[in-house]
Length: 143
Image (cartoon, rainbow, N blue to C red; front, side):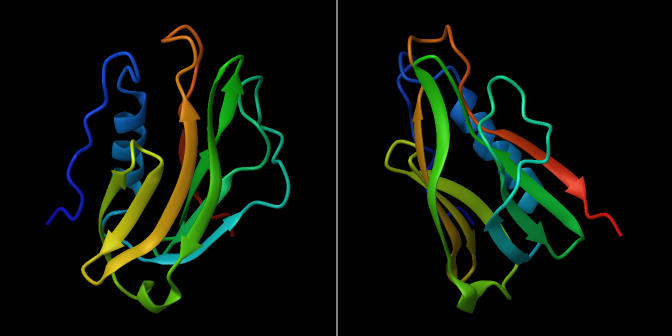
């Protein structure tokens, strides 16, 4: 079941980076529950030239952390502006990830509706000379 239709982006707006980011996030979270969603308080030292600051971390019921790290490269950027977790729905298994408003609102949803909403600012800058998009990584929780 898909709650949000795939959004078309003009070829001058995106080279496939944003849909690829959504697909990567979808692969990591579908079939699991969110245990915690938070901005990391400290940078883990793995930040490169492009990536800015600590990641946004989604902790899942399978013992994994999904980290989204935004960044900027000259006039291109991607950043998590804000997020809204719906705690009354976190006990539901995630069934999908979709977007609205030109990939500026990301919806992580279950059968009862959105579990987590992300407000995302992004621009490809001077198409497609500079890097943009989230760096998304999935890590086992140590311990």
